[in-house]
Figure 1: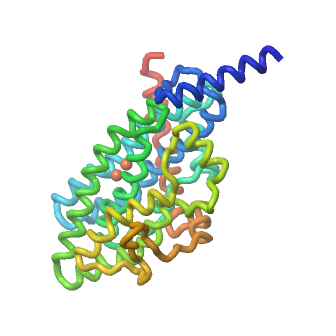
Figure 2: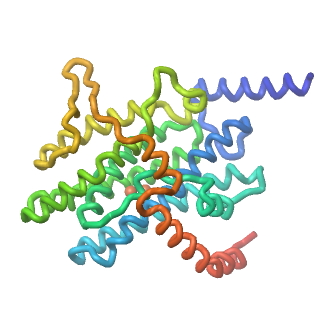
Length: 315
Ligand SMILES: [Fe+2]
Ligand SMILES: [Fe+2]
């Protein structure tokens, strides 16, 4: 009984710390549930950065100029670096479970750990690389900007650096899109087709809209100050930030119902196919299998490098 009360007190003290606005460090005591929620979020974010490098990597050998090739190579490298930074944060949290980065990668390859819907999609043209940089990274910064105030300090610190770099990625993508928008009719058509292809995936990026009541999972993450906005609030921010900019390039968003209410400022829009979204994140998207296979092969081929580094690292 005494032990139960002590655990209850620790939980209550932990929640009090969160209410005071304290940030939690890796070595601080935390409820097991808080640790699990963080690992789930950060491991998913980490593998999404790593898998997120692949759609644009496909365009590194085919970038139209040397300048664009250097820029997209740097972006791909940044995304893998973000993944590494986040895996370190996740593995510190997993240490009490006797687990590490190998388990994160094993879960990705087995399909137990999902990665973001947008990185399952095909990138058939150079305009797709532009749309990813401008709007996918733009959507990511809206979500990650919210997470800068996350109660877990190591995640918030890693995000501080990541969000800075994402700012450059957005400018890189916007520059590609603007060049195409001001280019030949073929280039404009290529850009319009890419936007039409990516629009539903961009809406799906934020997850399904909440029902009138938040799920237990969301309420818990808000209580833990792991997140502070709902999926729908984040999607609305995306519309407010990007819809007029997209229109200003003379592009058509493939949704005739898209409009902002003049008084409430809320955007109405056509829902994407949420069944398709579930299929995509279950690794049944257009490029899911090919990219996972590539990542698994590369991981396998790099085993000797990891062994050598582990062998020569201080204990
Ligand atoms: Fe990134
Ligand atoms: Fe990025």
